[in-house]
Figure 1 (tube, rainbow, N blue to C red):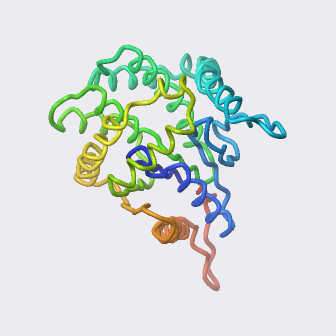
Figure 2: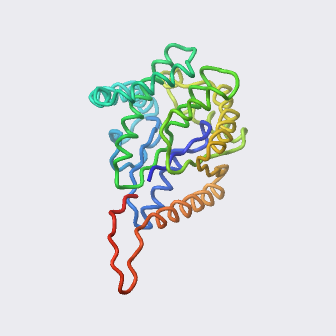
Figure 3: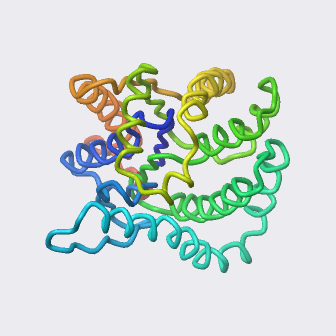
Length: 279
């Protein structure tokens, strides 16, 4: 089973994914989180797919040295992952074609962001192909729906026709979870995040107003996804109580889906050929 989170910047996708993975593990399910963490933040636990390298642990790092290390990781990690993806792209030309189509539908106006998003999509296709073959629950804190949102935000294409076509062109998760929070809460979190970032990291981020503009795009995308019959669960992450309630709701939903996928047990006097179960 592949679960994909999406939502505006600052809503807490990585925090939610980490908590949801812990909840599912507590119920006996193997979970493989695929995280897109920022190096300035604490590295979430992952178990296999696209696992980020663990940061060093100096005994008492200064704030300045931490920011310098975080900035270096932010620059080098995508390059290292792209190099690891090269062989995959050569053997999966359809992933390259799909990336090209997405960039054609929603071309980023900024050349640097266009290059960054193209490379990100290449890496994402590789991670998704691995996830599709995994026997575990694979949990993306952000993936193709979020990528389409970023493309729409940076291309400024009017209307939803091209966004809808882009959503039709990307792989479908078994469950989509949209995370939401009020704009003032998002603005406060993004401001706090910026305070912990160095100069280089800030240059690699979008400004506050552009980030908040993604809220409307994500709401439009949710309507487009529902119109296409794709399951979307919308949950609130405003504060710790709503986060806990949303984690419980998401966990209950996923556990029910996993139980429904479990092969039926043969009744007395009956013989049933069971197929292997893959979460």
